[in-house]
Image (tube, rainbow, N blue to C red; front, top):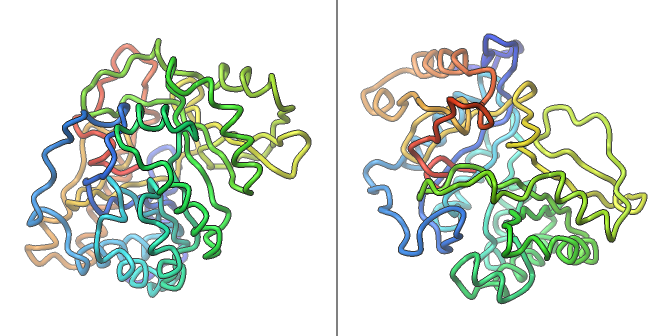
Length: 333
């Protein structure tokens, strides 16, 4: 499907899909408590996953429909052996989208330079704490040093701004928030705190145990002066200047201050399902039609129709909210 000057991924509320999140695998080498059980999950069978050729074709169709930014996620995207080739393939699309990746950073030090050379523009690295004991308690793995090396390698490779994503867990690492911010400031990383969302495989999310944006601002405010940055646009994070700037810190308050009205995201899972919202209860199958010989125009029409069905909001705080069947590791962050 050739690119068009007119956006086509438009929902009934006038929101335009410009930001594509692509899960390249559901597998992960950490076992974060807020994401999956200690024993892990039953991983997606390989035949169900999109091949590199299939994934690039679907991304290409979406770019032709107006997608401007592609973020590679998982699971842990670094576990897909062909990741560098995928990045190069996406960078070769026209018009060329911006390419980012969200990773836990384990092993990033070994491939950061190759990813940058292939066309990756920047990374977000998940790091909830720099306290070794708290890190191991949260991830159930002793890999903090690997993540730290991955962050440094990303900065050296020019994958900037290097952003750090952190989930604050009550009674575990919420006390570490000011120290984590200072650690990032000292190294030139941009920190983003994320409210814990109901996307765990265990379906054990408890809103009362979630550390809210208000609590984070209060805790950070005890050590830093935070000044709101205006003009957020469609960005998921509300940002604040730290001690007058130029450094900033962000908070993604998906639960207590949702930004659904400005959402421009659409998601493609590793098995070829298109989701118009992270919390959608339905998804449209693209893998089946793709493998059955559908044309790009036919695939594009399925994408357009699914985007048009996007709800006004996810409704986490509403009485009728039902958590998606898929966990975050299978949807893609």
